Figure 1 (cartoon, rainbow, N blue to C red):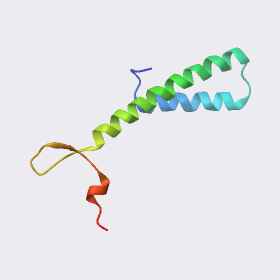
Figure 2: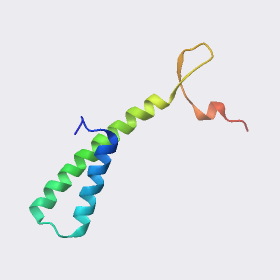
Figure 3: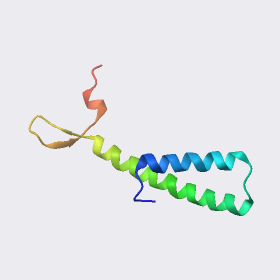
Length: 76
């Protein structure tokens, strides 16, 4: 699962959800699909967390990476 892109993982997850929602699946197969879906959810979550960390870094005026804090940049 880790080698799939976020988009491919999400696509597989959506397909599994549609298959499970159809109700036309045997119990054993449904359990296998559910287990696969949970692995995909974790993989997507991990990838989103990594992307969030990268996005939350910005370059300051000196060209140094700093954590982005929205509250520091808002005017009241």
